[in-house]
Image (cartoon, rainbow over all chains, first blue to last red; front, side, top):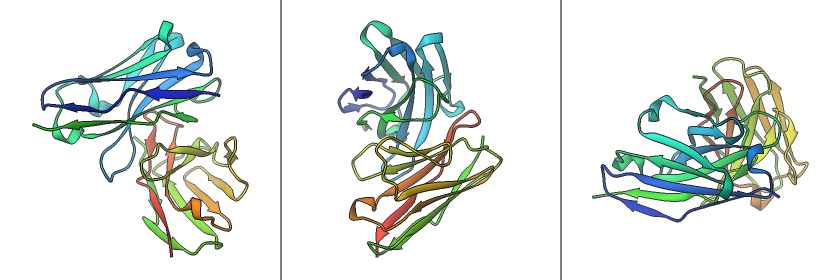
Length: 121
Length: 107
């Protein structure tokens, strides 16, 4: 069974960067397509970007271009989200979400537990 | 990008009754539409993909329908554990986009 386990909560200062990890198990890492979706307090879901490790293809939502980086480390079956130039409105729960096997890269059958990133001076 | 609009924002229903949630896309997404359930403090859970295919382990009381721009999630005979927020999401066009959610609350 596919499982995604994320790193723990982070508290950051405005202007700094944060790196969140997502470790995948229960399948061959190259068969995953992993995205990052965030949810601000009391708000809905917002797709930030994704990576397909098999073809090392990454793409990002226009809103985050220049501030976001998503990478994958195949030996550890882990994907990482790095967000820079943090602002208070980046305070949110960040989820990794994945498709395993066939089908659209963006149909999210599996989710991590979420990582709370708080940005405050 | 495709805008997904869900209605109503909040739906109050008594346990045992049925509920119908709607999702509209700003342009056709064919049948590339998913429904997710999210409970407080938890990650979303996939209920339906391909507009009408239940995900593994999802009870038969959840059903999805629609194609193009109009979609419906129907929950028959609501159980206490069904009261949550429901999101639709299109994955037909890049970028993938979510609706704003429908909160299903106990009446």
